[in-house]
Image (cartoon, rainbow, N blue to C red; front, side, top):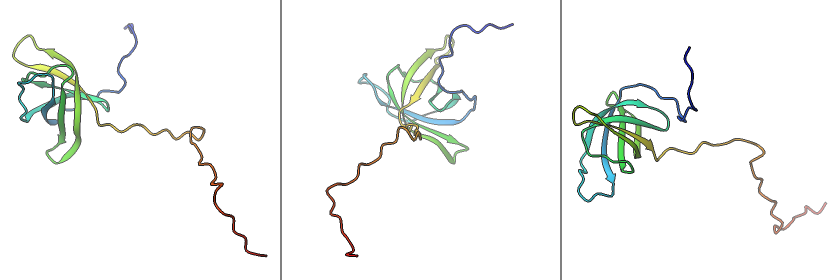
Length: 131
């Protein structure tokens, strides 16, 4: 029997799909960084973010421009992300970088109670037909 310890911290279900990505550091606190595009593949991804392996020096808080492409044709995501976790691998020069999307649209709520109605225009003139 497996016991669940603690509360699940993930907001989104992760899919273990391998997709090609292009990435580059767009904004960081360091002066010397490599602004060229790098190539990698996703380790896992969700609606809120993804993770990938890299040889570059990416740090938590760095803003990355990212393009996720399926089969070289279909753009899955193209926008900006923020590095939220960087795990250096013990062997090799690789690091696993987890990013969250910054350009995701807000979910629309369609609750009738939360909708606000426009008040009637009381300054408009009333016209009569003369009947």
